[in-house]
Amino acid sequence: MQYGIYFANSFSIMKIHIIHTLISAMVFWGVYGPAAALSAEDDQYFLDRINEIRTAPYNYAIEHLECTPDFLKAKGIKPDTTFARYTLDERLTAMAEDESQLMAGEEITVSEAPPYYRLTASTGGVVSFFNFMSREEAFIIVINYLFKKELDNESFDHILSKDYSSAGIAISAGKVGSGNAWFVAICLRSAELVSEIQMLNLINDVRSNPNNIWTYEYNGTKMNQADVFSLNSGICDLFAGKYEPLFFNADLSVSASQAETDPETGNCHGYEGEVVRSEVAIRSEEEWSQPVEFLFFSLLFQELASWPQGLVVFSNGIQDVGSSSTFQPGDGDGEIGFSILSFVVGKSNLNAGNNESAGSEDATTVRIYGLLFSDIDGKGLYAPGYELIKQTVKVYDDEMQEQEIQSAVTDNAGHFFMELPANQQYYFTATIDGVPVSWEGNDGNYLITTDQFVKLTHTPTPDVP
Image (tube, rainbow, N blue to C red; front, side, top):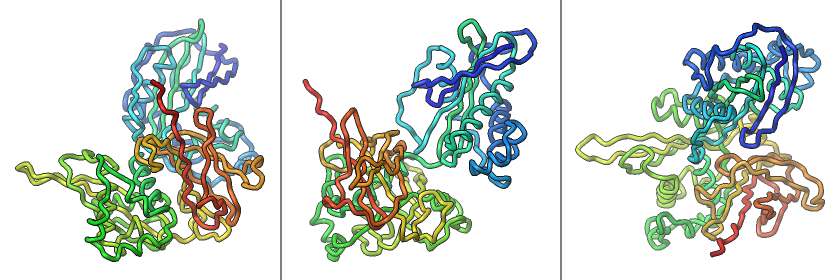
């Protein structure tokens, strides 16, 4: 029997790769109806197949893909290479069901809700055939192809990605032309929430220029300078400080979450360096009732009042941060509860395996905390909802702008991360709606000697009545 395999890394664009292979099979069709739902056991079975690859990619590739040891070692896959297992996520499973049904040509209502997690991705494929094929067999064909493609391209985007922690899987039945088909969708997400990175964007925007605190506003209200100076007369010295950006650290984020529920276990496992903890409590009627801007304003006001004792927004000597939020309801009788925003900040030792913390002690390397957003209100400052997501940012040698050095794609909070050689001049640029957007440097100076906050501000075209 002949079957075709169609693969897509983005279902909305549907870039299709086709493979034709001959296999023998029973002549039968109709075991599963279109868009047949997977049971919990099915979900776990398919997730286990992906985790089988992630936990032992070297052995799997040799046994199932007939790769040679030399080929795998050249791709960075060694006998002891392993990746963390994906966990099953019901929200992602529902998204994958929509994706697979959409691929199968079914009419569905696609959600337009903003992304909930920092990083999200979809991949999968379509296996077409003329006789019988089980969906288990189709799924194995798809993940084997995706795995081999990642090895060939040395781009571990999905099956072997380190960016994601959870997966959802769905398989729908349908037709491609005159043949039958299985439509396989795999949705992935990171552990971090968009709101966590949005908060870090806000913090780094004011760390880069403390005077920005007077421009930020929430619900039309700005920080009142007289009120702030009356709370802390020594606040003038804050504005003379130089504050390098903070970088997200997954280990510190896990530690912040653990410390909320069990302080005894809230150790910073995996983080090699000194850490301190801080938290802010904000009165809230219900969980998630306060937007990120309000939480940021509350944190900012608390740290301005206590400066220089504040440990997050305007603290020197720290590099990395993790955060977590919980809700503590009131005791009843209409008592308002609290949203507890917890931070763990640290100064790391050289720790190459720790997300954006890698290279922070290397004097020849600088880290870039990048932010790309649309200046919707014309104030030149980032606000949640202004981020430009999944856009490519390129960096060039400022003296030879034809030479691209590196590129990165913004996450769902508009943030991107790079590591670059220190003590060089750089030109950062992105193209939004056909218009180039570039970094303005440090007062026109493009020399980067230490960790740097790089902000690319897009000015939207005003609506023409």
